Image 1 (tube, rainbow, N blue to C red):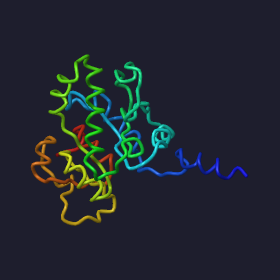
Image 2 (tube, rainbow, N blue to C red):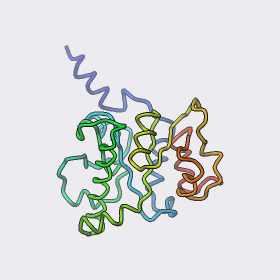
Image 3 (cartoon, one colour):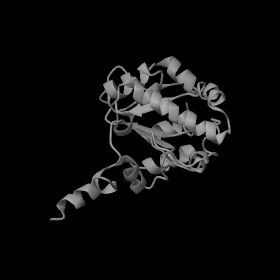
Image 4 (tube, rainbow, N blue to C red):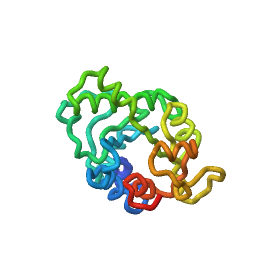
Length: 208
């Protein structure tokens, strides 16, 4: 009789999912100020075609997860904290549309604006001017939903392809670029085998 609660628990926690090795430590290192000295600020958000189980799943993996969700009202003290591994969640469950719809990406941009306005004690107009210069990178494993969606929204797309099945897309390991701008000048889409590979490149811990 308790099968349903057990299934709900399983698929709302780490029990029902796998992740790539070292995913948690890789993303935590990206938010580390010393590791990420190449960038003034880093905000990590989850933009996904999923429901409200996502924050609890990520928490069960060991991430320090912000309670900020699209459409939610939270205390400003939550927005001002910079010690989260995941700063916000933008889920189709809350936005009402799915990737590749541009709206879900623009909704994520609004959340970034909300966060930075609070952290920098600025008004929306000034904060918007500042965040428009940010490099927005989206990582996903489906070409149409993730790569096409990100490109149409003006984001830099990174295709997660651990088995190297996508022909004709430049791999990160083949790039000689020294920064994000140079990377996406070489190719409009970049392929990676793991999140860790991207983090190591972003933090300058591999030879470019």
